[in-house]
Length: 256
Image (cartoon, rainbow, N blue to C red):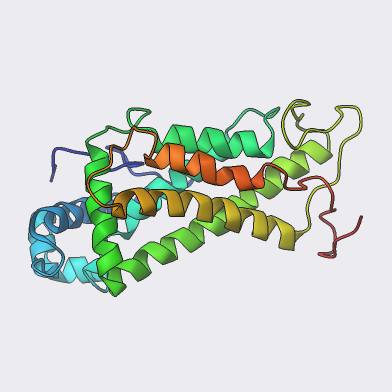
């Protein structure tokens, strides 16, 4: 079922991990179709007025099929939340090898949160409504929080891969960025605990920006100075002086 708009991070094809089976891909596509149907009903009729049976009917499936994929109606929008989060992490992963960590994070923000950069401006009105619903509903807010936590863990893995690649010579790093190192002397990378901390801060910077924009009084334009992209970029400034290269990723203990 098409609702006339796409949500940020969500295209006509469902993001899938590499080398998934046909069955897994079909299941993921079904989950996304249910999620789109749920989002459309939530936006048009509100969360309270929408039943799981309504979502099943809109998605063209039986109620029992709905419950094979989701335990509650609130969980049905999780794939949409997750797709946007996954797109940001993927953009950080695919940033140029010579980009600093902060530059990679900023590129991910611009690619994911800028209206028109692969995501239609009208889609952001859907996001605004869904996040306002999450703000008002504990069950939907829990779904959003779980997606954010999963994204944070994925981001930590991506940051570890980028820094490890730089330290082993499989990637190079910008000598002009805030975490620059001399190309001739690969630097040690962060301990796991510091990587988790950095990922948590970066994720919180983006999450707070999107939530702050969505729940602000009035309808703040998504492409303005108080839009999600600009807010997230300002929030990421707290990582400008983060000591990316000062601790080794070895046995989990930080060393100078």
